[in-house]
Length: 292
Image (cartoon, rainbow, N blue to C red; front, side, top):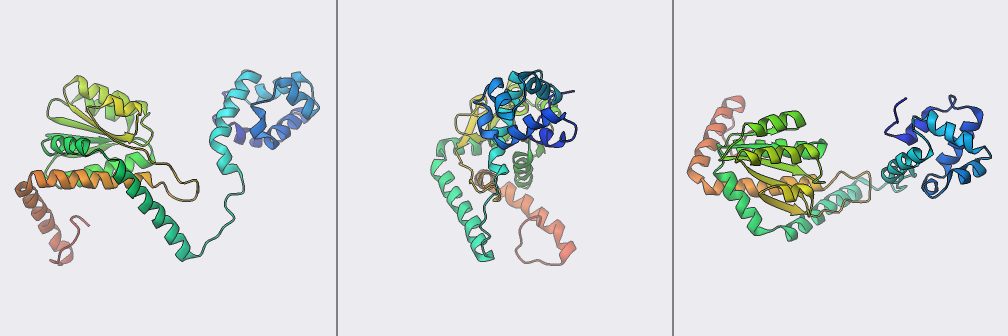
């Protein structure tokens, strides 16, 4: 049996499969998740009123190699799970309060990010992107991958070939085809994604420029030629969406606006063509967002 990733769920799912005495250990563990990492095998056996051998069998039944392996795996699971295991906020705000809370958090986060941005790094990124022969925006996970798609969506309108990729294998392959004049733009709120680190390393090897949008002092920030860094604390309210993705999108808008102004005549012509191509779909010639 392979060691499970989510040990807490596995303990719950194995109820009825554990032996009677192993179930006593399971009940004790689930009732004392925050304290388990500080307890020895003897402590747990004594508290659950079972033998040390039973505690070890419980660990093996879960798919762990033994008690030490169990403690390490459980500690990792508990570290990320505790904020979701409680009752959550009992507050049920009125709709107008909810709007104020969510929008207020976004405004505060955007203001914080604005105060952190390095103007020199922004300008360097704009200069490189405006002259790029081809841009690949890369990200992994739900948030960063969506921001990468938005990056490609913003820049192709400027007449700059732009694409986005969320698959790690494809990112590496695309990076391998890049050369001088091409740009890999890596996006990660953690700055630790191995796929992105590998891809920017590959792209740099072949002479491509690399830009990152990421957390301050992260591995990804250190790996790219130009880095735009922000330190965004996430809201402790687990029900609110992450504000960092909107910060990243706002920064991409800044870069796109800057790049557009570097090549105004070309951009105006591309935007005119795009808008003209859409008129027949709606018969509406009034000013509208391009592509919407």
